[in-house]
Amino acid sequence: MGGQGRPRRSRPIRGAGGASSTSAELSPRVGTYSASVTEPQLHKVRKIALALPEVNERFSHGATCFFVRDKWALCYFHDNHRGDGRVSLWCPAPPGVGEDLAGAEPARFFQPPTSASGTFSNWIGVFLDTTGDNKVDWDEIAAIVADAYRCVAPTALVAALQGRAGKSAAANNARRGERRD
Image (cartoon, rainbow, N blue to C red; front, side, top):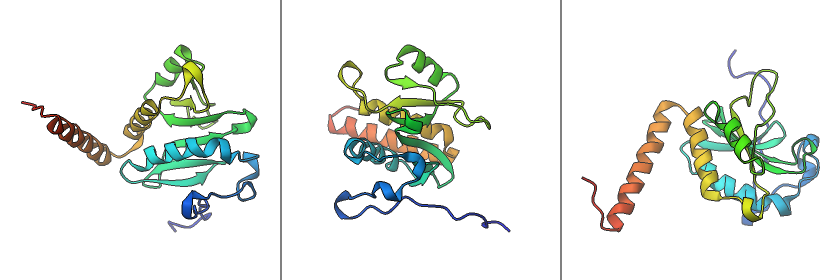
């Protein structure tokens, strides 16, 4: 009886030129979708996440979510989660990392609320609407998403990711005329 159950709801397909869905198409729990504010951040997160092996995107639990092999949650993009008025990204992290970063830099990081089943207990939240000294560092966001990928992806995909990173570094060194012995 595998494969039966509730059909999955997919995020509405993006049209030509990047046109996205309207608030009427989103879950009522999301509230008003402030596309003009969040679209640039979502576009950057999408570019980072979808560059990883076998990552896909769909709408899940009232948020845009990225999954590895449509199975393991890689990250959630939240716009005004439960009325908090913030734009944020939630990612799995090694134990203790979320707590350490949230304690060290609360203007940039937080610990997402843990569900009754323990989901999000080892996750990190990153605010994507910060400015000034706390302006979003997109290279750091890419590193956080890559670390999250290493936490949830199957071993073979993590090895593929590390192989790609190694080839990239070697190619960069070759372009600069450097040799690794």
